[in-house]
Length: 344
Image (cartoon, rainbow, N blue to C red; front, side, top):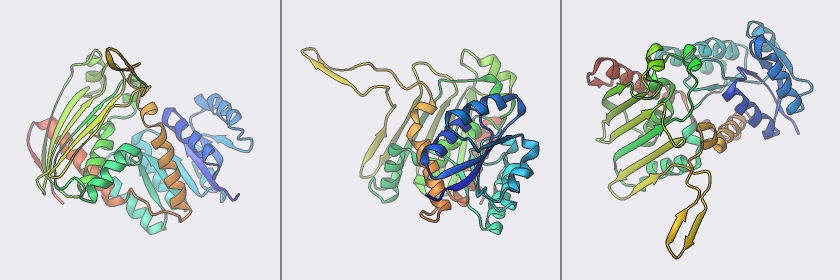
């Protein structure tokens, strides 16, 4: 089988998820893994695990060598957000297709610059906005866009994380709506398909690690309200720390139908006896890597098919720009306590 050549830069927690899916696709030959020298021992272990006998390991400062390799057709970027634009632009200018972790860039202008460069080079640029590729979210979103729910009146989206590594915030300082909420914001904007009118937001420090979050200038809890120009009202509930497992749920109310996307349990087992029906055990999955295991694989498969010319890219520049604009509207509202209006 003819496989597409690839490089991956940044092989930490999420990078290892994407690397595994690249290998499991059987459609990609990983020619390069790029990361700091400190983790090269881990990369060698991964190469052994996946039998990547011909894969080379190098450092980010040698990225030009990777880009000069004509076998590399695509680059998967999983470095800290502040470095995204640098490696996106280098990859595109070298004639490579790019898969980049969210958020694509720190600013709206940088996002625009990257998509403009992708257009100039005639290359695909996919931002890994994962909710679109989850089976439940995708089904509900497509039904909504087809009008199955009628006019969407309200959307309530809850996202509560259960795993926090404070060191992460030393390298990712975009704020809770950019870093954590952009998946939800993108999904809602895609599903509604309209421009926002205005938004407002509030935040607080109420978790058991509140002092740690404050030291990085981060909120651990935030809520956002968005009104779209078609009248749809959206409520976002974001918590960086919770208890009892990872929680992600959505309630959509339309004029024809309503739909709920509920939290995912480790087991869907139901036991019925003379006392009734019981869920056993009722444990939520531990974190987002478990919750979205299948959708991570689906988004990588989609990117591969886009590069092969077999599918149209479903996460386009216009939608990523819109999601990023909404992020910064909410961030401004969070910082100022004001109502922020959308400017096209």
